[in-house]
Length: 352
Image 1 (cartoon, rainbow, N blue to C red):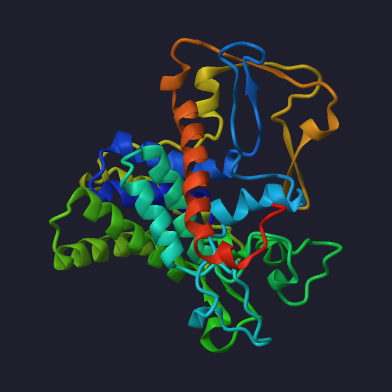
Image 2: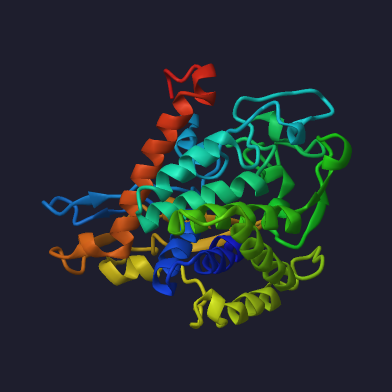
């Protein structure tokens, strides 16, 4: 999934579930920022306020296995049930790291975040949970298991859904996953998005309304899905209608049942820029270019490292960016512990 779901739709789901707009905004920004938190910063280096973050995404998909293992299976490709009906393949292959939608593992990770009552963790876990629908039948490591239509590995590495390009993430796309059998070959991303939205709404609503009845949850989620379905609109094979869809999400946000306030466009650097000073040396380390549709950071080509300092060393721990980064570390630890008792226990992780 991309910004459309992780930010715009997540905000709508959260407000409809009962979160105030300011809280829903934190959840939705945190959800999307999981994809943009792809650089390691050392701030106030060499001082008592020195701080280093953990990344939840990487622009270098050929990182060593150990580094990828701390990112993809925990934040983007949560291993589920290898025997799930939706995971049946023509070649009969199974994988303990295969992502399956709404899995027990994903639910346990999401539930842990919800009951922490930490909005940043809830946002991060919402991202991971939603991706179990979009990223189903892919694993978060290099493996030919991920190859769609016999892709050529020399051109596109078999990591995550790279060989399927951006197809799993476009909300109005219908495409084919030729690895699968029967009705699962045809993939309708809109259906997947709505299924994810329904389950996220149910969890968030019952968290805020623990005495809510199943009937009320059903009718409220039905109204939500009708609105989201209309906002996503018709099939869009080229993703050409993205801006029109975003306009419709923002129109929904103005309705009373979705908070009734304007929803700003997502800006990935807002939280960082609020709290950190940046001194550029050579090429700006945060600069990114697109190579064949893939974002590439220019910092790898610059021998000079930019200098980062806290704008206010006394208050940075109260900032959104710091709280998000601490939530990333918590999510990583909790998710790894949960998976270590399940799917990871079938693997040899001693060197990872």
